[in-house]
Length: 55
Length: 222
Length: 254
Image (cartoon, rainbow over the protein chains, first blue to last red):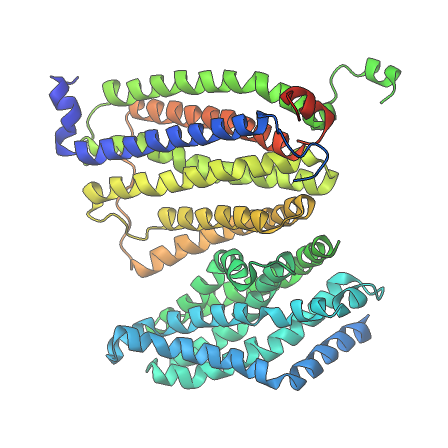
C-alpha cells in the first residue's frame, strides 16, 4: 500500500499532524503508566517511622 | 407543610433584609462584570448587540454562584443549619424554601437589572424583552444547580473557586437556551422553543435538585 | 458469613467488595486486560495504516480518527461507568465502589484531553482550524471539566468517606446532566451555524476503516480497564495502609 517508508512517514504531506497526534497519545499512555507504577511502588514501600503514630 | 416552607422563606428573607449590603453587592457584581465586557471588546454597538445576551447571561451565571455562601454556609457557620435540618421537617422542603428565598434576593433582582443593561448593549426592544423573560425562567435553575455545589462544598477551604468549577459546567444548558432565546428573537425567529426548554430545565431542576441537595447536605454535615 | 453460607455460595459478588480480595483479583486480572490492549492496539494500527485506503475527501489525515474516536468514546463511556460505581457506593455503602469511581476519573479525564488534542490536530488540516467549537468537541471539553470537578472536589475534602460520597453525588448529578448538555450544545452549534449542514466529520467508511476504528476502540477499552484496576489497587493500598493485610503485604518495619 505504501510505496516506501518515506511515503509512510510523510502521509501525503500530513505526517506532521498525524504523528503529532499519535505521539501525543503514546506520550500520554507512557506517562500514565509511569505515574501509576510509581504510585503502586510508593504504596508498597514499607514505612520506616510512624508505626503506631498516624501520619 | 406549607407553613414550614413559608417559615423558612420568611426567615431567610428577613436575614437577607438585615444584610442588605450583601444582597446589593451581588447585584453590583453582576453590573460591574457586565460593564467590563464593552471595556474589553470596544464600544461598537454592532458588536455589543451581538454579544450582549451572552454576556448578560454569563454575568448572571457568575453572580448567582458568587451569592451562594448566603444559602448554606452562613447558617452552617453559626450552627443554625443543623438545627433547621433537625427540626423534623423534610430536608427537601427546607432546601426548596431556602433556594426560593435565595432566588428572590439574587435571581429576581438580576432579572430586573437586566433591563437597563439591555439598553446599555442596545439589544433592542423585542430581544430585550426576551432577555428578561429568559432570565426569569432560567435563574431559578441557576440557583438550584448552584445550591448543589454549595451543599457539596460546605465548610471546605477551596471556597468560591471550587464551587464555580463544579457548578459552571452544569449550567451550560441554561446558558445556551437562555442566550439562544434572545439570539432567536434578534434574528427574527421565535424564542418560544428555547424559552420552553429553559422553563423545562428550571422545572426539572426544581423537581430533582432538592433531593440531591438534601443528600449533599447530609454528607457534608455528618 | 457463616461457614455453611459460604459453602452454599460459590461466588458472592460482595466478597470482592473486601479490599484484600479486590486487590488480589485486580492484580490477577489487570495483566490480561493489558495484554489484550496491546494486541488489539497493534492489530488496529495495522488495519488502520496498512489496510485502510486513502480517503477521497481528506487524504491520509483522516487516520487520526483511529485514536480520536476511541478516546472520545472512552471519555464518554468512562463517565457513565464512574457514575455507576459512584451510585453503587452511595446505595450500598461499599468502599470499593467509591475506590473504582476514583480510579476511573483520571483515566476518563485523560481520554477527554486526548480526544480534544487529537481532534484539534485533525481539525487543522481537515477543516482549517484547530478548534471550531463544534458540538462534539465542545461537549467533550465540558466533559473534561466534569471530570476535573470530580477530582477537585474529592481532593478538597480531607475525610475520605465524605470525599467519596460528595464526589459520588457530583458524578450522579453530572451523569444526569450529560445528555442535556450534549443536546443543548448540539442545538447551540446548529443555531449559530445557520442552516448549513456540517460536512460529514467522519469520511464515509470503507470496511477496513470501520474495522480499524472498532478494534482501536476495543483496545482503548481494554487499556482503560487495566489502568483503572491498577490505579484502584494503588488507592486501596493507600487507604488501607494501616490495616493488617497491607502491613503483611508491605513487610519491613511497617
